[in-house]
Length: 428
Image 1 (spheres, one colour):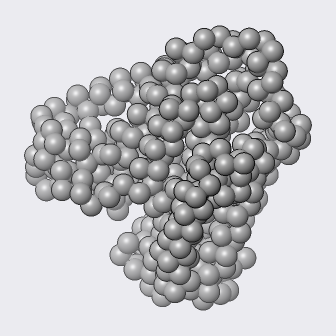
Image 2: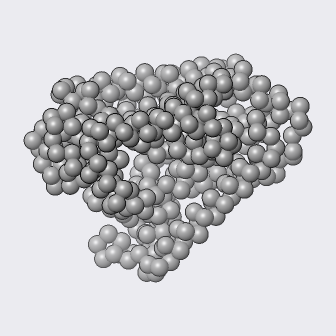
Image 3: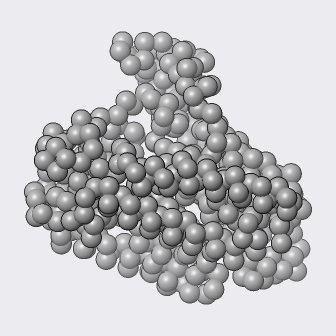
């Protein structure tokens, strides 16, 4: 059944998006090693060769290792701000040549992409074509994840699999799926925190067991020193988007941290035209904005919970997924493959409540994030008040969040029988 698109449109989009995926995502990844992947692969080779893992966060030393292994552009290499367990991701491939390793990673990512589509078909009761079109509408996100050898498609699949296991009553397995990649990429932790507030302890304990296992293996292989460095000097800077080799003002981050730096912090070289040179206002603006969004999200989650635990889970996870990326100190396009589950759940929630206009608004914002022509907005970066025009992804995400919150607060309380039907429909 075609829930999102009429059959001809769905098939046309399916063909077009699949061709784009092959031409701009898969083929480049099979033929050339781009940026990002060399950082993961160099760290894995250092571990496999028994190198000094205590120095992974030493940029100069890390770049020397990239030159020694002849992987990528050493001047662009750094292991920061990756958590230490990230160094273990590609260890099984460390004996391969860089391009061969990337080809294996690409194959795994494509397999995970297909599995994600199949699972979303089951979770959302959509047609296979609809699910495929929905996933591929993430555009630059899935293309970038493939081309750059990023592990986010695998992380997204893990979250989708965890939610599917939860629907099937496999709580411990669900928690393990959510927790498996949390020590590497933080995103799934918000889902575990949500289940903790729901007091679904089997899910939480499964997640905690996975997190502790991965962390213990990481400490055992890499040693404690690198983990201590991460906690003391890397994590804090990452959470406020201060990265050694990256411009903290760049609009590529598409975050409130970056936006308000552009607007209120003067820098003779990197930001000579702020709106106002008021450095203290930057911190205040970030704090107020993020606190307001977080308060709105928490209030909405509480309202959903009061309507009934069964019907609240899907939209709550959807809102949490959107909010996590909205509040993140820095995001790249490939991070948005993590929205497959949250946005899918939100669209399904609105469709089931007859709010198809709201559902298509969310879908449209999601697709715009995926295919927005960012080259047309970048010229506004660093031009005083016009800088806000250089942040379309951030404001599209904000619009998506506001639309969800507005609908939930304006929606009439559902009948008890309706809640039961919603719960049964999600499981089936």
